[in-house]
Length: 333
Image (cartoon, rainbow, N blue to C red):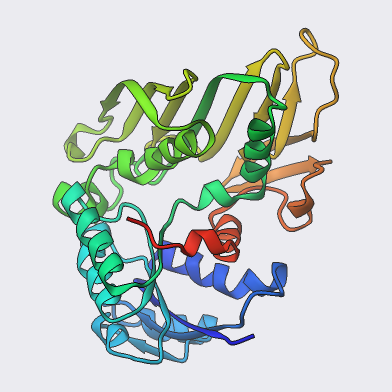
């Protein structure tokens, strides 16, 4: 198959995640085209050289515009800080590059619409980095819901806790400035929960929510969110996110009636409440602890065919799964 030349614009933590996903892709999906790491751009001195040395990029630059000007590059991962997403996204689309743009697409609705318009006008393909919807366990949960195996969905819960803003003496990066970071934890973490609610249950019709700032000296974007939402089918959803947690944790739970199967996709298991049903569950497993996106220990007897790839969810694994799904490269508007 013909290979794809890709570039990464912004080589911070998420740029590394995208790069690792590109490198792992054919390990799990050998039918996918060969990925050529053509170029990486980052304005921080030394990062480009590091990326080329560590991951094998053929070229590096401190100016993302060099990537836009290179006709040999087919697709670009936009993993720069949030305030650059609109500018880079529009420029890459106008240059004829397919784009995988991290959320948020911009700092405002207008920003997101500008990128979508550029993509549509250029006729390129695009996707937004809601990678968790393509994690194998989430795919399994959706299949259980769509098949009716969980009965009528009555409620769901999504929890996403991180610790990068927990220390009051931590670095005051661009993430804490509304003009550069945007909506804080709402756009950074809560957006994943909102996306999964819509992906699994449908659009949100009603919402009650609140936010809080735990370190007032950094009172710019919010540090925590909690919300109750009602989806279009009448299901109740709870989303809770935090960037100032003492530990990292990501979990999801969807329950229905009358079957009373409870699918917990991020914990890679489906739990049955034996008080209500004796039906067999599709999969089972336990996770004992979470440290920086990976379980400290885990065992699983999942029936999901993708279980041989990953024992627990991670941005890298679900990003690789996103790449392998042709629908994720469909033009978004």
